[in-house]
Length: 157
Image (cartoon, rainbow, N blue to C red):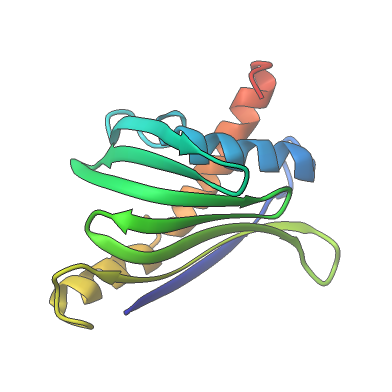
């Protein structure tokens, strides 16, 4: 199994401050259309195909892989991506919270397996290493906040 986590401050020194509501709007926008937040060309398709009061279903093609995710929103707090179809199974979570000093933080964590692959085998170990690397989910959190600030500055948030 793959378990990875990363946490970054929402408002590091020198950046335009985001409120919890603004950071949340960015997370929700990313959940609905990852193309706005991922590097150009990485996500070639992303659409909400079902919606209910408790969740929505997103189908996407990211890095050439077709995914189907059931996404739940806990307003102002947490987005959970359940991997319904694609190479991974499990859940990916993005969460806003205040640390002990009252500073707003954005945390990613996941608990995943790779469908059809040996548990803790070379493929899962490689995926774990990628998630935990400097170019992994910590970088994704930082780019999400950067794009949220850009959308806010453009009046599109």
